[in-house]
Length: 225
Image 1 (spheres, helix red, strand yellow):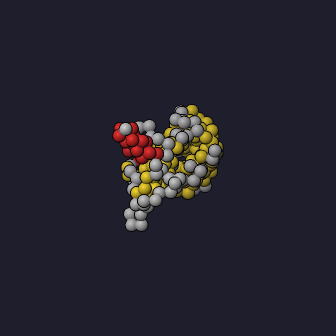
Image 2: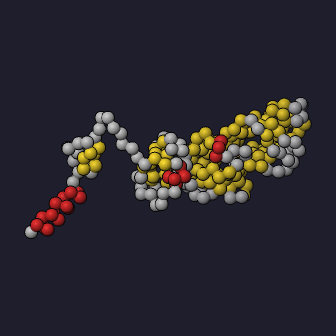
Image 3: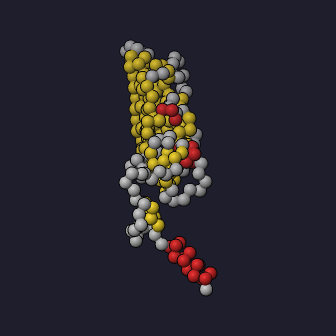
């Protein structure tokens, strides 16, 4: 009878409540931790280490030391607990040189070192102006560009969005008409239906044969549905 009694005790232990710091865990809790002078510390790791976790379970939690915030894993991937429902990505840069050549598109000079805000479960900044989408949805994409030495005369320009190497939209397309060498800027915004693993390129074209002084460059993604 002793082995059978031990088995009953083991079965009871598997299904009873567990308390740490308390002898009376709530009956609705499988595990309850109570303390007034100590903290619960989840696993701490970089963003790369977090993304390298093989087959994480739904509701897994880590502290992401790259972005200094808690992340939780759901059916769409890792999600920052600081994010709102409208997942976003913002990259910006001030100063530098803007490469331009007649009739040639160039990627925005913004990469992972220029990230101001990012939900890593939705976006991956691959290289200059190139973003990989990690969730299906409707995205609002905006971009802006300015220089301080646009030459006089008429210069055609455009800001374009490419998906997987193909043009899908022009955020802005027009001509700059300057009476003298001066400041110039352009911006635009559009919405697109994007899918997991789509690679998006944000590009600009300015018909000028001399590089320009960059004042400001930025682009943003907002997942609206």
